[in-house]
Image (tube, rainbow, N blue to C red; front, side):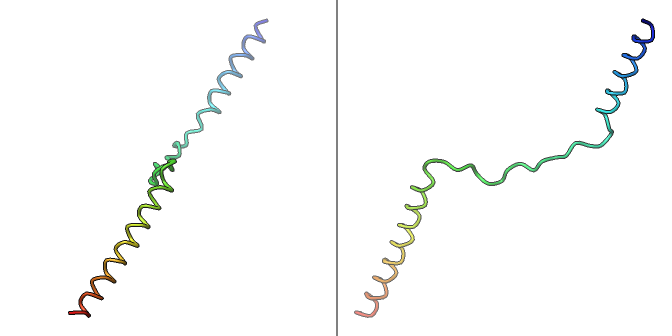
Length: 68
């Protein structure tokens, strides 16, 4: 019985030492990209519409300059 008790203690110590291998934990970089939401397609559509509107305003300004 004394042998089994000693064997259990030795195994517990070895398992404990195996878990502490001394290497530093890997640091993961925080995610820089924002998570996707259900509104992303809507926001993209609005951005595209604003860009198109800016092109139309620029075209109108050029036409107005040519008329003057």
